[in-house]
Structures are given as C-alpha cells and as structure tokens.
Image (tube, rainbow, N blue to C red; front, side):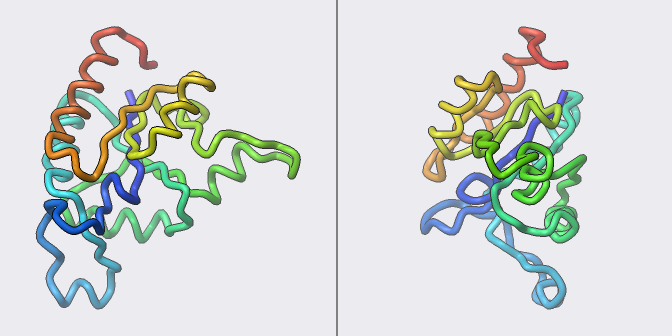
Amino acid sequence: MRISFDLDDTLVCYHAGVPQEPRLHWFLRLFIHDEPLRQGTPELMRQLRQRGWEVWVYTTSNRSPAAVRRWLRWHGVLLDGMVNQDAHDRHLRRSPQDRPPSKNPAAFGIDLHVDDSDGVRMEGEQHGFQVAVVTPDDRDWTAKVLCAADELARRGDGR
C-alpha cells in the first residue's frame, strides 16, 4: 500500500511553536536546502515502512524530486516516489481544458494521502481518494496518521 504526504504545513512547518526535527549540520546546508521538518517524521516513516507501506510525497509545489529525496534522506526518511505539480499536470492535464482536482493520489496508485488542507479532503470525497487531515497545531499528528493507515489496511481498501 502507498501513503503520500503533502509538504507545506504538513511535513514542512514554518509556523512558530510547531516542534521540529533537529536541523541538518551547517556543512550539509551548504549543499541541501534544509527546511523545518516536523518532529516525528522520521520515526513515523519507519513505522509505516514496518507496516508494509510505500512512502511518497505529493505536493503542489514545484520542488525538485531529487532535492526533496536528498533532503529527506539526510533526515533518515527514504521515499519510494514523489509527485510534484509538474508531474501532476503532465499526468492529469492532457489539455488546457482539463480541470483535475488540486491533487489526485489515486491516479498515482496512492491509497492514503496526508494533508493539512480540508479542501483536499473534500476533493477526496468528490473524486474517490482517501485523505487524512493533520494541521500544524496537531500535536498527536503521527498517531492520527498511523490510525488512518491501520484502519485503511484493516478494511482492505488499498491495492
């Protein structure tokens, strides 16, 4: 099964008061753009992998997949795949008239998407994909994600 995570305000939190993983060593930051990674991310990803999940990122930003992979790898997170805005558009907007939802994880074989946006959750209801919403101020966000993943796996809704 595949799970994807949004970056901005989900894994990357610039909000004051949101606990963060330690920043990368200053020398690494010369080569890698180090953003504030939400506390608990590496352990959550390890737990998901142990449960048999593939871990992806699905973002509406145009961050480079290679740069995101390197940055997360230095934080101890291995990605199985990434969808950025460019990949989303190439896959879902075959003509200028196409108006796909802002995200469509199911189109990429993703069973569960984690996002901070209630709007993405509503798109999921309309377009038939599963979304777990976690906000930057949600201190129990990792437990919420694990619960949603376990529930989906238990129901057998994934591929």
